[in-house]
Image (cartoon, rainbow, N blue to C red; front, top):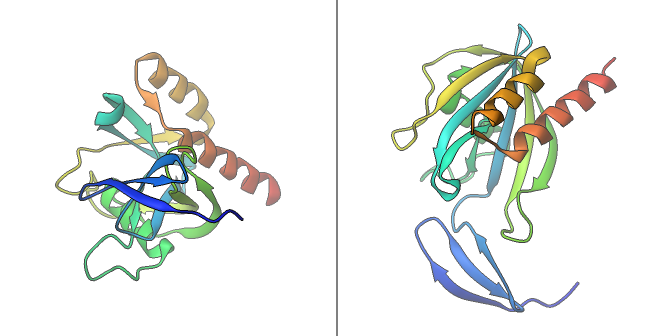
Length: 180
């Protein structure tokens, strides 16, 4: 393990730019990690979200996700608690059975951020969803058997597909193969 020497280059409310031994990267000054959820309804539908993302200047198809431990007074929430909160907030879906599947890097050349992926099965609509006051989220409910063609049509129409969608669907398929 190399000895690291970090130098703070810049900081905003949401990000820090760090130089570590000549390599610049960003990190979040708040929270304990990122959670991502692969929600599947009792009817075998995947719940996806869509929102505008300024860094890519476009509409992005994503799995529900968010920060854990970033809310004042809730800094000690578990990753699963955060995942359940984010799913309900963004999609209005909740409940079901939950399984922690993997912890992955989001972009290791750019950030030290780790994403913990959960699969939530048998989720049900419980609230309106749509995100908090700072988000404009559209919820898409897609039959699992049609997900590949649905994503292809979305991409052809100019929407950007977040890589975590493909990662989450892969983990879901692996889980399904293992349970048979």
